[in-house]
Length: 336
Image (tube, rainbow, N blue to C red; front, side):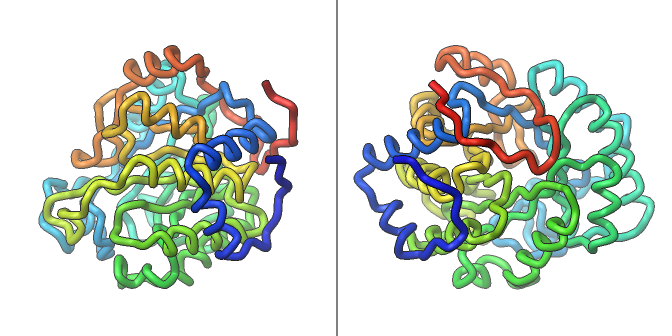
């Protein structure tokens, strides 16, 4: 399969791709992946929770919501030196992208935001891509993040527009899309994907991909997260997502958004090396790794650097260096 970049996908077209016989779907996605990316390169990212817990939102999956009784204890914003030291350790392990997450509903113009801007600048100056996920923001705030050197802004859609209000009531789907549109008024790249295992249908998954695939340009980064069930949240008893559902989602995202990085994100810790290899074959080209066996909070486990390096070496994969500039669009290339 050789595909071009398009922004007029229908849900029926994407559903047809998603429903292909599994091995054929993987093959087609792998072919598209090789058309636009070096299949030997995997970007390894580190996620730092710079401000943990106490979020006023009611996202049904989230351990950091103040509305649920979970193991997560609210913590103040980390100091800049702590974040820089974590980023330095990550860089030494081969990480090329550091993502900073704050449990905020929205960015506020205060001393905490000034500290985040300093974090962005200092970690960018280390030669790393920096991504932030801070909630909703204004155009002025987005431009200040851009000026500080921010490479990417994460704001996930989570699920389909139809299913969204079942999972979250404290903001709307339009709020999510508006935040992405605000980021697009800068040269900061967009990171936006979703979560599998929220009780959504296959049609919801396809609808979410259709929304993302019809954004022009596509998000440069599309994280595919697997629900990590957290005791105390409304989704604590959701069943595990079958691995082949994860592979189908990655493969479909790869085909409809061929230039995007498809990131195998939260929930990867429960996947075996064989299962992760299928995800890479289907077009995933980024993972999150850690030195403390957690991704964002104590309830979201993450494989450690050494285990991931061992896996990448076993599969003949290499860590990808940071990108050279924002909004870099990959050109089709015959990559072996």
